[in-house]
Image (cartoon, rainbow, N blue to C red):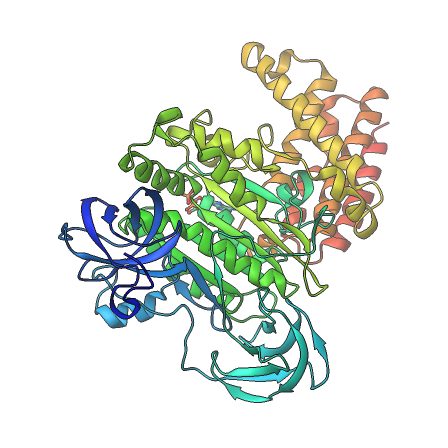
Length: 587
Ligand code: ADP
């Protein structure tokens, strides 16, 4: 069907040839790859994923039961895009950026009806726009032309869309506008509004990606202390059931020093996602006391939503994250879980009868995961600001088996791995992050920051902790065989020190106010105090003091209480003095 012959009625219109779950084949459709199309009499939203001769294959973002061959397929001629502009924070979307509250209103009940479309941001609401340019200024793509107080916490920067030409400003308006009203007009006729669109599968342009050198401080001791992630870094958390994945993610969302959080809930079981939708709005932003949602955008796809919408939700999320990055913000994107996303790819791939790769996943699984994580990074933006997207992906390996393809391919890409461990959780060691299996490849890049901002010997102390925990691991194997008392005294002492590291340093209670967030200075202080005990204790042992006397000094058990002290600085100072004095008095 040619576009030129009868453009008004038949532009791009085709007919359904076959329907297989979320995959619909159409004929006579004039379309390009990734075009968004409306399928069937109900106009269900879908995306072109394959074109072969006259047959176009479409993945449909809505339930397709009842859709029959012969029904029309309409092409929009546009790729799958998101609406970007004020109103994305405090919003809860489905995988193709339809606001859930608006959908619910339109359909009376969530997740049921089909063919309902809704813009990603409110088109009627008026926002207070203050220009930052004036007539005569020259602006280029990406430049900031004004600000809008989007929420109590975040100023939204209105930018020249990257695909504009830019040029000399003719006029800039101050006042209340809807997102589609032009607020800045250029002499070349280009009109800049608060809303812009961007195709989700395309990375937003920047000047360059830089080596990240600042940590995304999480306030979680084991993460900042041992396995730090950079601003602009990538991390994976496998989360066996009950291992504390939800609690860890909430802690990160609340305390990590990101300006904006984008949380992509991708196809976890329905009730889990409902939990997120209910929980997040209740969370308080510890920095401002406002709702955490004031700097959060939530994308929620439960597994009872159609599989193709799950495939797209990750892209929707990262595009929103990139947009806030362009404003100069540090954004943390959390995807939960990338395994469900991969399963969606697998399901669609099998409907397409593609040649399956490992465990039925498509051969391009690794490439898709890599493309996603590559959109994270620390960037110089087009407008000269610096911003970052840190991507933290949860993985849910069936049966906790890390050898499966999604975990393995993810591990090859991400630079931080926080291994949540069901055994530790069972022993009530929280956060249940396994220190033997976890790692961070950012340590060397970030050490200069910690050295400059926290303590000169930050890296040396961390190494000491890691070595001590390693040694404990080895000694534990011997203890299992012969019992603790069979060990020489110096090894028994190492076990005692390692116990304080585990209980006083690595454990952190997410439900106690004073402990849920631990600044890096306190993380350092706890570790140094345990090391003081270590050094003094080994000196005492060398001087011939019996181990029982060393381990039973009054001060020692206080090592486990530093974390919960309000005035920890004073407490630490006294404790270090007491430890030294009590141990030295023994010889
Ligand atoms: P998952 O999401 O992996 O199934 P949750 O995050 O719901 O697991 O955690 C299960 C339980 O473990 C929580 O209800 C809580 O009691 C405990 N828990 C997890 N992390 C912590 C933590 N950091 N501090 C204290 N308790 C925790």
